[in-house]
Length: 352
Ligand SMILES: [Zn+2]
Image 1 (spheres, rainbow, N blue to C red):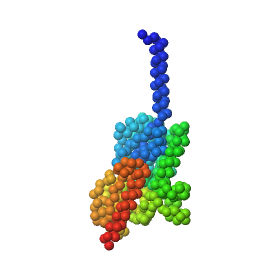
Image 2 (cartoon, rainbow, N blue to C red):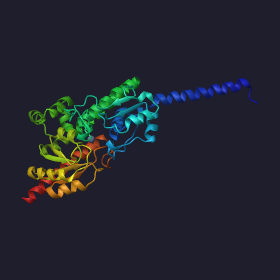
Image 3 (tube, rainbow, N blue to C red):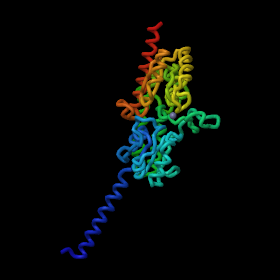
Image 4 (spheres, helix red, strand yellow):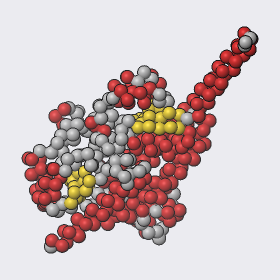
């Protein structure tokens, strides 16, 4: 027979064990939920073992088209930190998911809600008031900013600062992880020797100002990395399916003539395609760039009419096997765009 006193002791001990394991659990890892796979991957790079991260999107769908699901709310319910791309990319599901999650700590404006676009130099900010006749135009600017690798650094910086805010005891680890992530991007972008010789700030500044060529020349350095892969194609014009490649093109000096969608989010029409084909032929546009979740019909038709090459490439983490994380996704895009442009230019020469 267990005495009453002993029973109380056992209960107290059990409560203590539960309390310790709960507080240990809470202190152990921050639970991060992101809207996109890219954000999840960058959060994992910065958070390391100190966080667990899941994403709403799989990387294979059009994020504009994602709709709120109960499973998203379950994820959001347990989150310490919710991270979005922002600029209304997630307007189709975020308000409903946050409302349904019963977790006020992750509502907009709270410490548990982070918009990763803070500090990004925005493109396509409308200069006139936006209305529905303009298609799915984003009134705050183009939300596809993760395709400029410099913005990958900005996203990581925003995540670092918020993780430090939520978990100051581990600030040093978040800073170290962030520095390592940025160094990885820098080396992929400019090459090991260039990064060893010049500061990252100087390199990105020169890249943004389009003066990197001269800087490397003065320093006696060879162009390398992603920068060198697309260097021979600077100024080349391309068309894209959706208005999602502007940040990428801007960073690498490529030009986007137009999109297959007559307005963002509006499927191609035969009238728009006919006009586009004429412009592409006149300007000898060699490349049509598209995400894998769009139909190939219009791009193939346009390629047939103009002789341009269609390149279907995933621009989110896990959109395709080669895009395992943020760096390999960017690497895959740069390599495949460079290869497609090489082929397109050569086949053009063969025709002449
Ligand atoms: Zn878009």
